[in-house]
Image (tube, protein in one colour):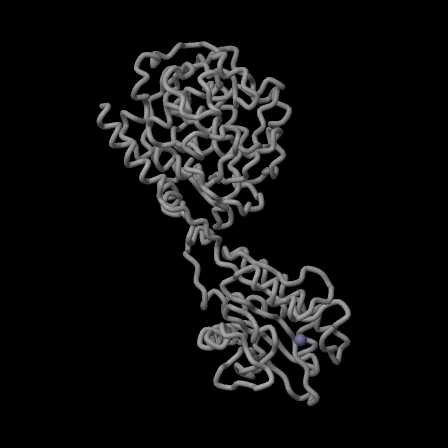
Length: 499
Ligand SMILES: [Zn+2]
């Protein structure tokens, strides 16, 4: 057994030592042309180009976000932004591609239709040298231009004016495939009146988005995990029905909330099944879910909290709250996982303490060191665990993924802790009760629920964890009333600290 664990541990540490790539989803820069003191073209119907561009750009942004791209806008207000500034902002975003949205104008009011500009090194203009990158990117920009034009024409139905080599600044000076879409002509009465129609602008946005998707396809599932270090773990858990995303995004780097963590726990261990085993006699001192002011019945995870309370997995904080939307801390995650998997009321740790910030007296020292011993949880450094740090949805997935990969015997018992394995059956483990961030006071150890198979309840939607370093102490994360997947903004900091 010991040897078995040693090799398991070794395997796990190799796993955790794997290089950490925290790439973002594929990013598109959307540039709404003109703005502020620069109206761009003015339509025969009085329409300002800057407003048309901005509206289409916003619609495009929404479409791309919905598909799983990250989107950066060069302007978010009706303000003047120089061309150089637009390129600088684009370079700073290091996107996969750049698309500028414009409407056209021509002295001949008979001219109408859609066209797409790109820089082409075959048609250099001496006075307007391109960046080296853009010259080299000619084939890419040209391909992007063709695909976008094709989809714009199919969606919006303006006349086909083709793709056009151009030395326009924003598509000549950047570092990534770049195009400028001239949606239609404001100088043409027919085009201009269609551009005034919001449904037509939506079609134009649809077309541009479709062209971008054709050029830069995303994985069908969780495109925001495209190159993420936790992608494989998340997809394995998704297959098992343990984690879910939000609008096809996983949002890996957002902190996981306590509600999300319990939901994942429910899918993993099956709270209803555990309650059946416990029978109808959960201890009477179990807190009533309805007694927590911060857990309204309308909360999406209310039922799960009720079950978790009955099972003794959580008891609420000393101030009478249960904080469903607060990020779960690393210590809470360890403690909850141990309670859910073993149902036993473990004592504090008496072995060697490797982490300076987790002394034996720490409320969650037992779970933390036992999880470490199993090789599924490690410090942020050799000497530091950062118990109060929140866990990202990605980190949580990695933890659960390692947990479900454990042999069944290891899932339910701590290797060295045979001694304190005997479940004390009611005990309000004082070691845990005092912690300022203890998720709960003592787990009232219901009969050790044997871990159900890893894939237990394949319910549909679960969110997952993510990573903002400092968990707000009093749960003011995005309130999530309608969906288990919170709508928090993905945080950018994503260094997975080997959860
Ligand atoms: Zn323009």
